[in-house]
Length: 178
Image (tube, rainbow, N blue to C red; front, side, top):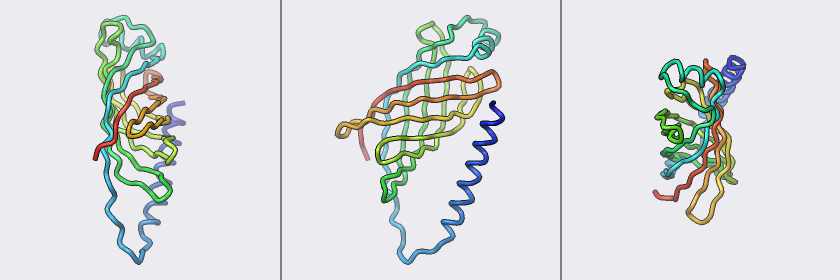
């Protein structure tokens, strides 16, 4: 399953690179304006389900018993760097989390994501994840509810890895600031 997901991800990235390079080769009569950037960072909380092999791996590596559902607390650093005329937005994010506090554990992780977000706040993302529970590529889908300058993202992520997948649900908030 992990190999199939990785092959599909590589194929999608390859298609995007080919498509974007042909699009960038086209000339336009007017110069592009530099994109307006925006920083949207804030806290994140949630839960992660660890597959049985991940639980076993943590037990072997750290000599600690862990329940398969752990808490997550952290911070997301987000930067919007391009918005199209249709409202589609390109974003890059760093998400740092500490898992397992509810069980007296310290399981750190960091994820770098490349995100595509629609005007309506629906988003899809992928990027590398490094964690004490293993390495993998995070695949994320979510939606952001908005109220004025306040954004409330709801995200579901899966990180396939050699020890099995990890599934997370995170929620948080941030406010617009340039």
